[in-house]
Length: 387
Image (cartoon, rainbow, N blue to C red; front, side):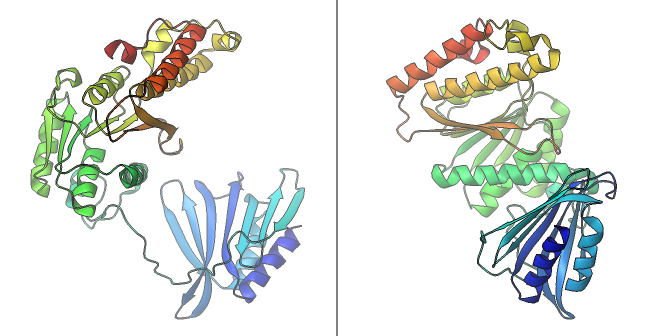
C-alpha cells in the first residue's frame, strides 16, 4: 500500500501533474511540535524541486528537495512519524492511511483539481494586514523588522482569521458612510487596531472606531499607540459597557467580554440597531449557576465538565435566537482552532437593510428560547432580561 502511494507520487512528479501532498496524524516519533507537512512543486534556478513546509506549533520551516529525495523522505516518514498522507494531482487524488499496528489502506479517485499547480517559488500571498505596521510592534506582535514573534504566532493567526470574517461580512453587508463602530471590552486592543487598520487602509473607509475598556492604563496605552500610528479615527475610553450610550452604532464588536458583559454589549448593539454584530463569548457563568436540566441530558450533566460545556452551548444558542428574534440573521461557528485559543466560538449577526423585525420570525425564535429554558431549568437569560 505504501509502495502504491509512493509510485503515485513519483509518477505525478515525473509528469508534472503534482498539485500538493500533505502528511498528517503525527506519531510520538515525529519531531517535537511538528503538526503536519505540506508539499508542493516549485521551480528554482537549480531546476524543479518539491518544497516541503514543516508546520510546527509556532513556526513554519521550508526545505526544498528533488523528486527522488522527496520519495525517499516520504518512505522514511510514512508509517513512523505520520500515519496519514493525501496526494492531489491533475490525474488523480490518492490517500494513504496507516493504523498504529501498521496496517495500511490505499485509495484513489478522480482528481478534485485539474488546474496545474502554481510552481513559482515566491507566490504572492494576499495579506489583510501588513506585518510591518508599527502598531503591531508597539503591541508586542512583531519585532522591529516587522517579523511576527514566535510567542505571538497564535495571536497573529487570530488577528488574520478575525479580519477574514470581517471581510466576508462586509461583502454582503457594506458599512454606511462615516460608520460608527464600537469594540466593547477591547483590552489591549490587538483586534481593535487590526479592524481600524483593515477598514481604513484596505477598504479606504472613513470610520470612527471606539474601544470601550474599564482599565485606565490600557486605555491610555492604546490611545498613545493610536496617535503614534496616525489613526485619527480610533479612540479608546475608560468606561463600563453598561454606561456607554452611542448616538449611532453601525457595527458592534464584543470579543471575549466576560460572562454577562457579552450580553450587555449585544443589548447595546440590538437597541442601537447596529447593522453588524460580532461577538466571541468568553465564559458562561450566569446560565450554569441557574441550570437544572429536566430533559434527557440531565443524567450526563452531573459531570462538571459536561455541565460547563452544555451551559456554554445553551447560553450562546439563546443569544443567537434572541438576535434572530430582533431581526438579525445569525451564524455561530468556530472562530479559530482550539490549538490556538480556547475561546473559539464566534457569533455573527447582520440585520436586514430596512431594520424591521419579522413578527413570525420573532415568534418562532422566542418559542425556541422558551423551550430551551424549560428543558434546562433556566429562569431567565440575562440578554433576554436586558431586551
